[in-house]
Structures are given as structure tokens and as C-alpha cells.
Length: 429
Image 1 (cartoon, rainbow, N blue to C red):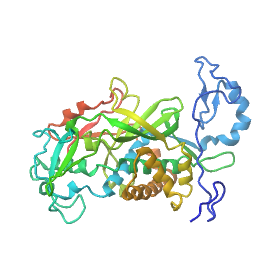
Image 2 (image 1 turned 135 degrees about the horizontal axis):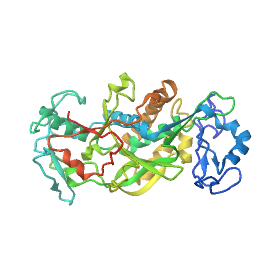
Image 3 (image 1 turned 30 degrees about the horizontal axis):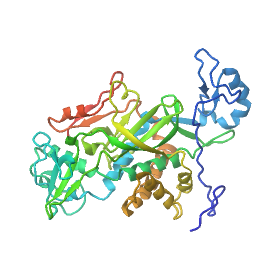
Image 4 (image 1 turned 90 degrees about the vertical axis):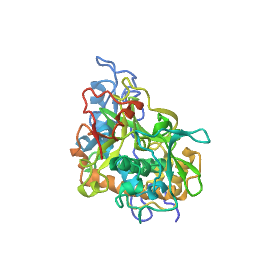
């Protein structure tokens, strides 16, 4: 199918989705060009309604109002705090994990001792250190891929308990496909949030993300290393041929970043559970009862300003790529209210391959596009139709899914300063 023209109506009679970029920098007054505020604190300010107009003083804001009121939108602006909304994104990532192709170690019995209190990491022939999971890949422990079928102790007879077996099962289940999962979520944000706009005489809403009072100026995906000790890594030996397969590599890790117009940054990571960093969000308050049946808890690490106080960095970042300000992805999401056309799909694939520095598998490509559309539908339901985010709690509830005797493993990771916030509680399943 030939591409539509870049602007205007689609040849199929539907308006193209157009990305409306927020301000990138808090640099100068839109009226007089001053780079400093003229008030007591000499700071530039933003329009309190839309957050997309910069002023140095009340006088300049009043001077600009006759022009700005045509575009401001007033009460039609909705600025969603990412610190309150991220559990919904964690839910989307968890649904991806549950529906992606199963890991081979989830389908065959585990035959060795990898209990948290009795096993130690081993050094593999290539020098990598990890806990080694021996998999009898010559047989299956269940008839199909449903994680709720069969008994966990049939899968791993040497497990100290059913909760310990379930914990390892879900660590393995959540391995892999991190970049496709994050790309699908980022595309949904781009398509469902940053294509909204409003203005004088319009009944539409302009929805934007913020962090506290600052608008998000950019978001995308970062790549680098995560702080993970050998005890948190997994590797697998297949009994059929004694071959060893590395588990998810913390030195090739991906996470999302959100940067505010005031150059403050938060990070969002859904892929640390497999490394035994088991901070979880209960999803009941963030999705419909039907959706909650898919995933009642979702892993999420939200690195915000409290996390930076007195805690070492969890990441060593090597590269990043913007999703919000990527013109190719703007073209790719033009029809996501309906579908992804065949000429738009390669734009998404190229984005991932250029960033990862490798060819993506056909499964990775298909999953990214499939879930991008599924996430768009979920976003539309949440933000546009139900507006469920209006009732989200202001403090995100958290639990820690720990095995007996395992809670101290969290000392391996930086944890936030909980003063003034709600501490996570321990959960054993």
C-alpha cells in the first residue's frame, strides 16, 4: 500500500494523527525574549493552564493573553503526573510479559537446587557469573503454556516451598523482549497523549505528562548496564546437550526516561524483576476489573527525585533515543486510531534496530507492532473514554515479593528515601 501524504486527510478519509510537541526548553520569555524572570526569584514561569508558554513576568503574560487564549485551551488541558500514572504503564508491560512466547525453562522441569538460601552463583566457561538453572528440556511438565496450569513443585521438585518455586517461575517468565515491550509502550504514549490538542472554541482536550509541576519535555528509551550482582543473574543448562544459555544480560539493559522542561529526569524500568529486584505494584486501582484479571501485580522501578537522595545510581547509561522527538515515529503512528499500515511498520523496526545495533527477530518485530496497537486501545479506554486516571491514588502503593530469608537481597539495589512517602510492604506469594 502506498503511503499517504504527510499532512492533511488520509486517502481513506480519516484525519492523520499529528504529534504536537511540547516546549523543549525553559529558555526565554515569549513576549520580550528575556532569559530571566523579573519577579522575586528571577525565574521564568509557564502558563499555569497549558504549560506551553514561557513568561518572565505577569506583565508579559497579560500582554500575550489576547494571542495565547486562542491556543491555550484553559480548563481543557489535563496534565497527568507520571509519578502517579506509571503503574498503568507497568500493567501494560506485564501483559506483554504474560503474552509473549514462553521461555523454554518455564515449560520443562528444573532439576537442581537454585533455592535462594542454599545455592550460590557459579562461574560459566565464558567467565560470566550467575545462578545456574539446570533444565530437563527432554520433557514437558505440562500440556500447554498456561502458567496457572500444573503444580509448581512438579516443575521444580527441589524448591524449598511453593512460593519459592512461583517466584523463580515468574522471574524466568519475565525475561527478554525488553526493547520491544518498551517501544510498544512509548509508541502508545506518543499516539494517544501527544496527538491531543485544543484551542479556542474546541471541546477537545490537550493531555500531557508532567512530573510534579514541570511538563515533560522529552521521553524515550535508554540503554546501558544495570547494577546487578551475580546472585541476581540466571543462566540455564539444557540437559539434552549440556549447552549453556545466558539469561537476561544486565549489561545490555533498557529502560524509559522522562525529562522535564526544568531538566529534571525520572526513569522507569519494568525489567528488573528477573534480576530479583522485586518491587511490585498492585494493579487493581489502575485498570478495570476485567483487565485486572490479566495481571494483579506488575513489576516497576520508578527512579525519581527521592531515589537520588543518598542512593547510588542503578544504571550506567551508554546511549538513549527520543521517542517524542523522532520524526520517523511521528509518521509511524499517524493511523494508530485504526491500524498500522504496511509502509509504517518498517519505520518502527528500523527505530529498534538502529538503537539496538542488531537485527530484530521476526517475533520481536511482530510483538512490538501487535502490542503497540493493543496499548493504544488501552490508553484510549483509560484516558479518553473512562478517564480512570482521575481516580488514581496520589501515592503509589508498592509491595516487595520476597522469598523467605531473601529480603536482604534488596540491599544490593538503591532504594528511595521513604520519608514522607508510603513504604512498600513485603508480599510472599
